[in-house]
Amino acid sequence: MTQQEPKSLLQSLVRSRGWSYTEAAKEFRRYGRLLAEELDDGDYRTADVSEPTWRRWTGGRQRRMPNGPAPRILERMFPGRSVQELLGPPPVAVTLRPAPNERDIAMTARNAAAHAGNAASAHLPDMTLDQIDDDVRSLAVAYDTTDPGTAFRDCNRLLLDIQNKLERTLRPRQEERLYLAAGMLTSLLSVAAFDLAALGPAVQFARTSAMYGQTIEHGPLQAYAHGVLAYLAYWDSQPSSALRHIKLAMSFGGVGDMGRVRLHAIEARTFAHLGRPRESARAIQAALEPGSGLRDELHDSGGEFAFHPPRAAMSHAATYLVLRDSKHAEESAMHALRLLAQEATPDRPVQMQVTVDLARARLLRGELDGVDDALGPVFQTSAEWRTIGLVDRVSKLRMELARSETARAHLGKEVEERIEEFVALAAARPLPGGGPLPIGL
Image (spheres, helix red, strand yellow):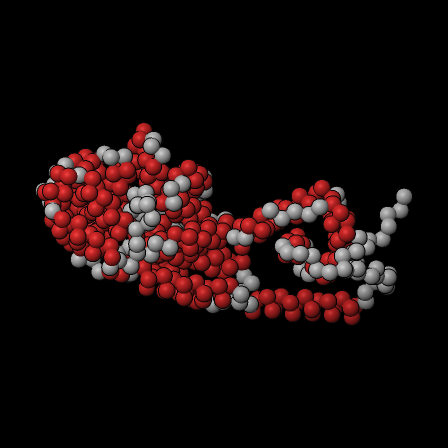
């Protein structure tokens, strides 16, 4: 039986792919989920098409634009075609023509050469990309000594410039470099948003970074972004979700020793929040094991992406506090402070965070002498540097003081009042309900 002529371009394209309605609907749902991840829009995630609707579309009987999100999904399923074209009549069949002559062939060759020339001209100077790489790494290195508000604005400006440049090049290698730079910047923006206690945007920036990494199949970038998503998840009291993210992060290839240590440190904190001390201790031990010398271009670029021994020790101290292991918490905090003191920029906010952890460890042990002295430099931290990590630590110290009559009597009400003033003047605010212990990354 001879098949009828297609009633629409959509029907023609579907026939060429050999799709039944069931297969077409499956593809429709799949592209809807992809768009949901890109656009962070739940309407796309649940999008579906019934068989009568599909028959109407393919049969050329759709007289008006379909309701959203169908048009965008159809255009993603059939790139280069608008929904109006897809639902409209198929192209008129072309009658047979004589074979092209030499003039036609020469014209085709000239058109191809012109197109290649245009593509070759759509690129950026390599020096421009080198400068972008330098700028991204400079922002990462400077993050530890730049207040989060300024860092956020600087990263955002550079990200907008990179997104503009992505529209000016057609060279795959240049696009790959720009996507990597964009992914690194969105990771930094996630960290800055987190420091400013904007947890929702922090999650969105981290997801964007992971998608940039997926676009260029860059394992270290995806691992870093999912590591961020892991600790943001248990900050949001979702340790099980955090564990899923960290397991996914560990599945990516190409991650060097420093990235491996970072992921094990986050894994240890995750298990601590899940109340699984054995797994937590095993993850800490894995982080302490010597590496194989493997490096990667992201974690070894330095600054905020690095995870040197001082930062690892800070993270372990905070993990031990979650486990209520005051002895190891104090040892790790002291080790971190000794390592930080050897660096060129002492008295940074990151040093203040571990100082509070040291005070909390001593308070947990009932060793009250020195707690007040440890808090002295913390209270001198300027308002723009009082990030969520520092503010939440100080707030938890205050709650622990309130629960301990002995500590309260020894340290006096003055310390509680200074903590209250410290939090009131901070750029960030503690999370409602206290929130889980910060990771200290």
